[in-house]
Length: 512
Image 1 (spheres, rainbow, N blue to C red):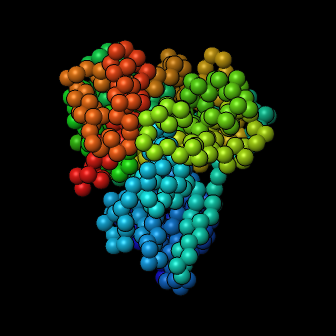
Image 2: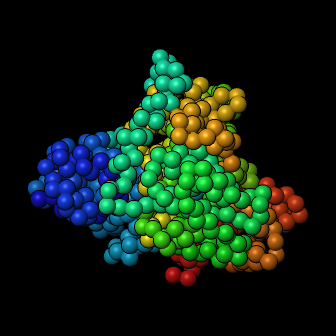
Image 3: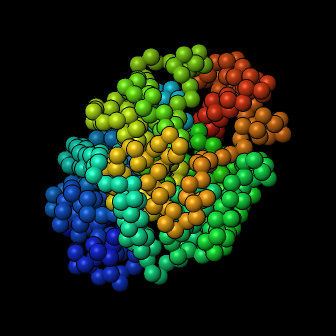
C-alpha cells in the first residue's frame, strides 16, 4: 500500500493522468491528486515525474518495500527539506518551521551560508541557514530505506540547439504549446485572476487566459510605477484591473512578516512588494496566474546580451543573476570569513555539464538551476502560501522549456532585443508596443526610501545592535550605510541584504 505522507502542489495534466491510471476524475482535488501520486508511483516508480506536468513536492511511504520515496519537481517550484537526526531518524517536509518543531531537530545557525548570502542575496544550493537541514534539489528524488538515504537525479535541463527552424517557426511552436497548456492550468470549476506588470510575460499569460481581473502593485513615485502600464494592457485586452498602491511605511512594516514566512532570509527587495500583492489578491481570489520562467528559458535579462563578451570567463565569476559583494569586501565586514566558501563553486558542475555550449546557454543553465530555485520560486511559493493564495505559472512547464532547450541563442537575444522568439510569439495576441516593450524588471523605490530617516530607523538600529556584532564588523557595515546616505545609492543592495539577514536572524534565533 502507498501512503501519501506529504504533498504540496498542483498537477497540471490531471485529466490525462486520470485516464491513463484509471482514476475517477470526479474525486475532490485533494483525493484525486493523492490517487495520481500513488498510482503513478506504482506504475512508473522513480520515473513518475516525467509523466507529470505542474508544480509538486511530495513524500510517500511504500508499505511493501518499507521505504520512503520523496520527490521535487523539475524546476523546484515547491520546496522540500530533510534532516537526519543524531539517532538516525529522518525528518522531512515542505515547511522548515514544521521540521524545527519535530523531536530530534537541533537548531543551529549554519554561518557559512551567510558568506554566500552576502553575494547572492538568497539561499543557493542544497544547504540552508539551519545546520544539517538540506533541500532536496530540483529534478531529484530521494529514497530513505533502513536508515540509509539515497538521492538520484531524474531530470536536468539539457540543451541541444536545432538550427533548422526560422524565427517564425520557433514563435509558432511557443504559441501552439502555450495554447495546449493553458486549459490545463485551471479546471473548469475554478476561477482565477492574473498578476500583471508592464512586461511581456504576464501580459502574454493574460492574453492567453480567460481571466477577467488583473492584479498589480504600484507606487506614488511615478518613475518607479509600472502599474500604469499594466492598467493600459488590461484595458487593451478588455480585462478589469485592481491596483494596490504601496507606501514606504507599509513596505518596511511588512519586512518581518516576509522574513518569518520565507523561513530563510531573502535579500530580493521585490519580495516585499510581492508579499503585499499576494495579500491584496487573496482578498478576492484563491488562484492567481503569474509569468515566471520565461526570462531564464528564453534569454530575458538584459545582461544576457553581454554573454558573448564574457565568453570563457563566465566560469570564473557567473553564479547567477545577482552577485553584489566580492570576496575582499566580505572578508572586511565578516567576523568569520572562510576563503574556501566561494559562490562560484555552486555552479562548477553546471559549467561541466554545459561544456562546449555557447555562453548564453551556460548563463541560462546557471540561472535555471540556481537563481530560479533559490530566489524566484522560493519567493513565489512562500509568499503566496502565507497569504492563502495559490499561484500557477503557465510558462514554467517542461514543454515550454523543451522549446527553449532546442532554440539557438540567436533567437533568444540579439543586439537590439532580448527574448526575441518569445516576444514574436506574444505578438500574435498582443500589440507590438507591449510584446516588444523594453524589459523594466520588478522596480522597487527602496534605494530612495531607505535613505530617508523617516523609514530607515530599524535599519540603523539593527546595524548598531549586539546581534550585528555577532557576525559583522559594525564599523565597516555602518561605513557602507553612511556612504549610501551620502549619495552612493549603489550600496543599497548590500545594506538591504545585511538588514534582511538580521531581521530573519532575530525572528528565528533571538525572539523565538
